[in-house]
Image (tube, rainbow, N blue to C red):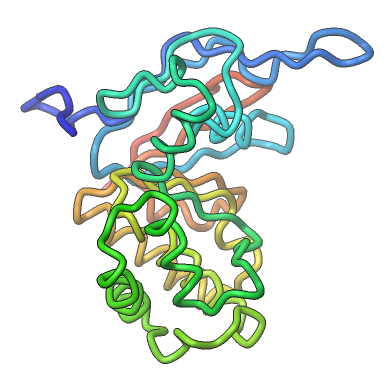
Length: 239
């Protein structure tokens, strides 16, 4: 996948232009996103913060194609996400976006290794004979290769989150999107997870994280604050 060249700034991976998201409710139309325009470059580690109901999760959902924008343009790399149908979105998301959830969402009847192999099986990105070894390598990178053949319920919360990150990396996507990934972790494990995301950004991955935890701001290259569905401010990390 090729992205636009820019020698003076990170190459743009994500571009949102005048994005609106409206929901119809019994009491009338509700705008969850209002004229949101953003540019996020390769290798950035960006936080999306704001009060409950500010539009954080809606932004993540329209960016990843889990939900569709009412209007506006959304591009990730050279893909116009807003122009894809549901089947195309599913294939595109499987290969290009790793999504990490607060509650892990590992399938309970599959082993940890099988959970990590699942995106590879779905997208057929690696030969079947190579999938388990890749899963083990990713789990080793997360420090839990010795848990590969256990069920998720046998792991601690921190280990489950590490497994979920390994699963998100299965197809080597350029973009990782995390929705409150440290919300159920203790502070030590949270710091370890945040440091790992920092390392991934250093390797060129773009990491976009929804969080309400202000004390994690030191990890991010940029913080985007939403209020009432609109971008209220953007702040670069001070060095």
